[in-house]
Length: 250
Image 1 (cartoon, rainbow, N blue to C red):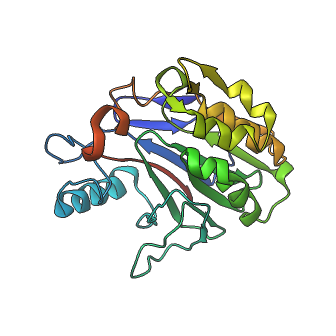
Image 2: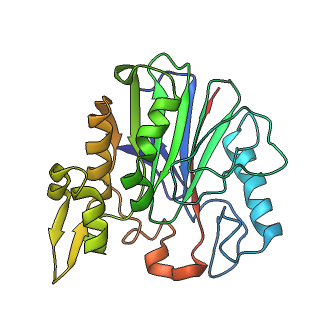
Image 3: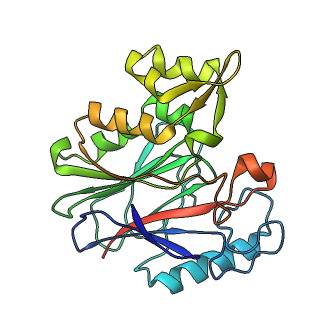
């Protein structure tokens, strides 16, 4: 699954040596005050802008990143940005990004949604996607795989921390968004009460990736609601911070 401590998670997957990846936790070396303590990296959750900017600078220094992370304006869609190491004036509106350029650091912010990291087995390209249920159902993982411009058999994926199936109750509209497209998805939902289901985001992501031809899938086993290392929108509400999943080409 991963190599972890209280501040960082480092994916355990057979990525090429030049592909680096890390996931932050709220217990990293940041300076956010309550209720965001300590390492909130999201600018749109109510934390002070200067504090988040300081945390992002600390992140770059602590991990020795080759460049400033390429943050996105995430909207629960399927847009995929192709990025290089130099930041633009504004964050691109997209829920995934890919890069073929060394020194590029891709970053996804989450607080219960599923972050998915991609790389080619020769280390020539990387990707990162934000997969909440809406984006996952709409095809954000498939769109990212296409934008990587590699045969699916040459790609691998790592599923990062998200809300676990035991903690994630959803309504019938969520189940229908998946099952109406593919009846096999019904196996990822467990009934709880009338019109409500436990939803396994990582299992759904695995189904979608395999259907797209990506069979080398790693990670999973997290629950952001139950694990206090992570920010969780369901636990903390609108003032939940965000943690980052990062991948870069050294």
